[in-house]
Amino acid sequence: MKKLILNEAFGIFALSLLLVPQVAHTVYVFKINSQYHAPWWSWAYALGVDLAVLIFTVKGWKKVAIAYFFGTLAHNLVYQFYPESVWSALLICVMLSATIFSFSHLFYSGDKLGATENTEVRSESSLEVKRIHAILEAGIQIEMKPFKCPECGECFAIAKQLNGHISTHKKQGEWFAENYGDYETKNLEREALVKKSFS
Image (cartoon, rainbow, N blue to C red):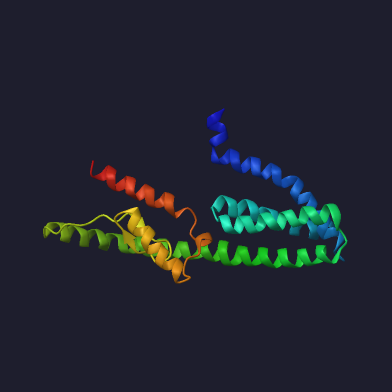
């Protein structure tokens, strides 16, 4: 039972169930404030906004997910207390625009950028292997740097060095945690791979 509860797919399923009544609230709020009589307008709005919560949570973008938490909370409050108020109409305007921006800027463009980077990595991998082989043949030592900065791509040998580097990004206003996903786990996986290779 514990294994099932800790399974990621089970967590996504449970969250999806919780989104069902939330979608109903969001549909009602849109319908009561809209000039459209066809119900699918409100369903399109509700599913788009509420699925954003699921997508950004699964992606690990905590700040964006928290922003959507406040958005869905506002929908619930408006649904209960102010269904036909100016606040309700304003909420729909803000949430619709914010969701479109979030999907296009964070989700779609981020994935597109990642796909481009993966293509470049594959094309350069054979050349990189040749370079490493030549360095090792010359007797030069290579320091493994598994801790990669998700902002600029610079790598470090230990987590402490990366943390110091990240603090520099933060001071300069160049750190956008919601864009990086679960980079810490990836760094730990790379460290484990290095340790395994040399054990």
